[in-house]
Image (cartoon, rainbow, N blue to C red; front, top):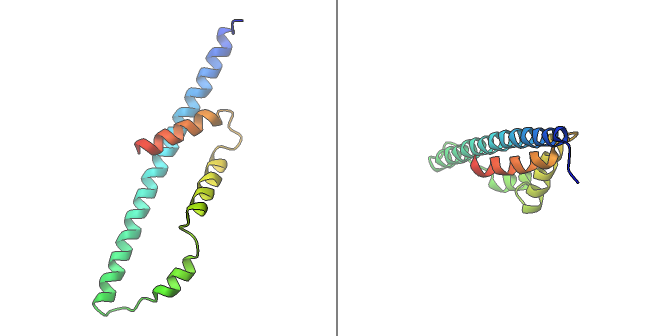
Length: 108
């Protein structure tokens, strides 16, 4: 059974567009996360320096409680899955988008 050329061209276009937009979104997401991690680390270092010099006092116990379980593995995975659901809703090319997003994260 042979598929019509128009149908093949349509699916190739959808998959190509989905993969391209997924790659762009994954690449941008990884760069944004790296930037946030950099500034978060810089903020932590500045806090440590100011605490070491006696300029400020940091209540680490309160910060640990306030953060709760934000950095637990299961909460990170569920957050990533929710993010992917939001950015790929109503996309007919979600499979290609997901593959492109993963590739963009790897290359970003």
